[in-house]
Amino acid sequence: MTATSKYQIFISSTYDDLRDERDQVIRAVLEMGHIPVGMEMFSAADQQQWQIISRHIESSDYYVVLVAHRYGSMEADRSYTEKEYDYAIECGIPVLGFVIDDAAPWPPSKSDKEQKKRNAVARFKEKVKSRYIGHWSSKADLYGKVSIALNKQMTVQPRTGWVRADRAAGPEVVAELARLSKENAELRTQLEAARRGGRSEASQAWKDFIDRIYDYSSAVRWARTIEQQFNVTPDERGKANENLDLKLSEVDKTMVKLELEFRGTEQEPFLERAHSLFQRVHKREARGGEITEFARFVGAAIRAEPAS
Image 1 (tube, rainbow, N blue to C red):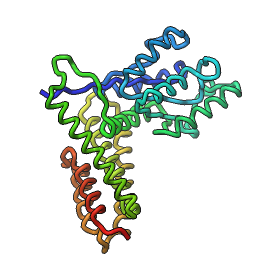
Image 2: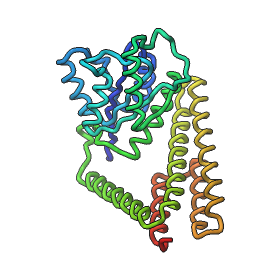
Image 3: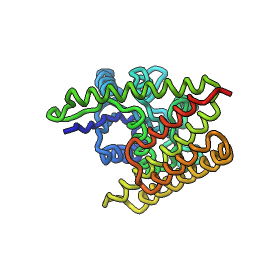
Image 4: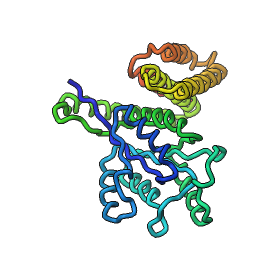
């Protein structure tokens, strides 16, 4: 029996001002079947507790940070939230940052008034934005965005995770993971070779399509999950459908660009396969790995073309 990993996800933020938002993220992680960990468990201002926090960060598979308009408690010239963020990066843990939209309404009582801290939180936001970044405007908005981002990250960058001792992976599973890891590395090498070989424009166009179709596929899976849950509010269901419509629109725009650029060229055969893939994803008929198969097909074909 194949063991199903549960990922440990460390959730970081300032505390008092983002209690409700953290609750939404914790709920999202739990409903995904994974393990949320956060500073609710600790006294972050205690140096001994930092040793515990750092160990939990080290053992986490993913790290999520929420940033609004407070910088938080500081040690020397750095807040504990930023200290956690820096440590997660130092440990090589995939980091997902979610920064509040500047236009989102926010109570003045939950914003820093001291100019030094306002400057510090502005600098921290820019640091978070330099990596993966999602903007949010409400706690309901966070629930869907964090779920979709984590699902995508878990697919793109799977981690070790945790399994029950009686379901730990056997040698055949370890061998399969090694094979997939090698295959992924080879695909990355091939795409880079295609780019260096003078075919970067076509490669980038298809990369954009694959990114859009992948995002849409993730949104489809999330909407299906929402449909199957009985405790979801109409607002949450509406948010999932709005996100699905947005991703569909992005795929449509990308398809139009591909049609204008590649119809009547040597890339035309790929267009038909792209249309077929999109229809299967749209109808929720695509099987697992089909997007990867398409990427492999296009990448191999582009490498085989003579450089212009």
